[in-house]
Image (cartoon, rainbow, N blue to C red; front, side, top):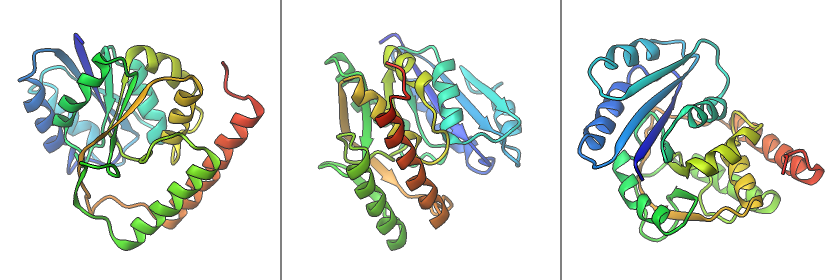
Length: 240
């Protein structure tokens, strides 16, 4: 690998994004490969864009893609992944719940021929440093069960926000993406599985940020989008 792209979709993150970007930069500056850091602002109502613009002068290879309207995390993730130029492209959460140094455990699998490497909080070796509350754990279990029944993708943790793709897998999968808010990860993985890409799950350390919330309405919307993905697969909506 010659170049790594780090994509950070962001919405109303002006209180956390600077700390995350500094941590990402500190790690990447020590690596033997070149890199870029792309922050994709999803029409934030706070000063997320302003914070990132100010940091562009101090953090090497940092670039802001600023959307004035909100489109959804899946939409800006797709935008960032397709705008990136790295041989490997990883998207991560702006709250830094999974730190960028986990990428060191991912890269050897690309050398072994895997196309997609996913962080998982649910396989042996993972470390959930701070658990979610019981309600979120229960809702997560319900969601995983529904995914397993309706859109089985063969992985234990579809929702971990730390996923890496080769450039070729990115360019083949993300243009077909149609789900842009709640269940976009599931759609991406369903498309990857349908195209028989080699996928590897890797255990990660994950810290729950209590400032991040998923409400019951969000879980309902996820369910509706999972049904939409299932229908799309049945009806052949996705191009081959």
